[in-house]
Length: 477
Image (tube, rainbow, N blue to C red; front, side, top):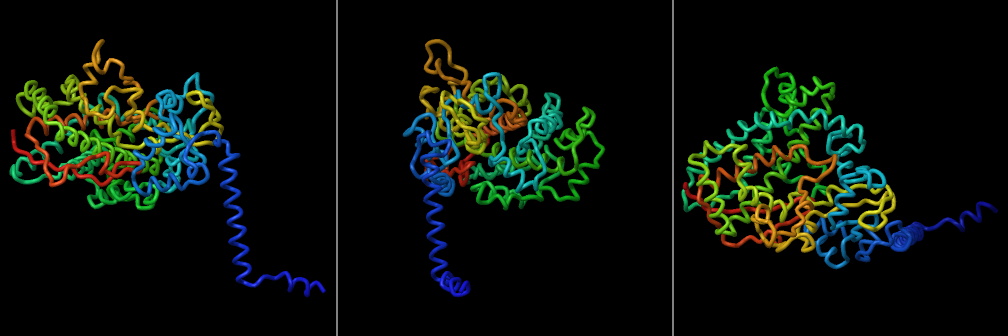
């Protein structure tokens, strides 16, 4: 009898497949209903598709218009918008300060747990903590203290000779190019930064073909995460660097010397943190340099103003040093303005998990991912006069009665803020100042190429900017 009943209950393969599809569809519909009506973030405005599924965000990343797509959402929905069922983007300085600078006014700690950066730690570095990916506050403090010796004022001064050496080699190379030739500045600058970062990180040249691997990795970041090059420096060369006894001013030597301050890192932690410095130092610095020359080549008047500032201050390129460049207002204005308009990394890539807190007047429940969108904030008319225009003078000519008097410069945070502020920001800025100053001092540059590049329209963005070329013609000044 029981067998007879079982035979009647048993489904044919086609019926079983149909039932599976129906059950899956019902579960999917139920999940969408939950996300839209009952999810802890359901009170946040945003597109319907973003509320019920991660499809909106996946599409924005895949089609590589992430910066513009998020900016458009904020224009439509306001200062906070739901970009995925469990993720909210903010576009205010108040939110930026709350998320990244936990202080007495913050109701808890905004963790990296469950964010893209913590995922990178598991996938790329096989779970070995580094200062970017660790989710533990105590571990982060320990790793940060271990890296600090590489970023002191003394270390910065010692590292300049490495930067100058590679920059001189590029200037000699560019000086041999005729004024009729079109120069791919992006390629030359990327190669220069690759060489500088490798020398600064390990005191050894990096594997050149891994530069292409790193570029491929940054194309969409998440879809290509498994392509992250793990052998930027071969293991034997890394061991040689770690065993070296000289006093060379590279990051790895400084990190190894951190044991003098009572901080001991394992070999795996040294490799993870050193390769991290290459990863974050290479792409962001190279992108910033291309962005600066993009704006200068489009604006001949401001290019001439920068040339005049440099050529009246210095008689020879050898006179140009990192410390002397700190006092040049127009040079530093050009750099800051390029970072404002084209921050090299998307704010989505530095998201955090809410502990259950009020962010700029709106309660965000615990477990919801939050981010402050730098691209939108740094182009917002709420904070900037002429927000979409390249105006280097806003950084030094902002006194009473000036056009830029009311700019909220404190919301300009290309290197983040708080305990997670970028450790290598001064090293990167010194490289950028030296490179821009010496190239503009030594050469007259003009735009080249058949088609004019419009960065915001033509350059793709996911978590980083990708697929761009700044072309120029140059002649020795």
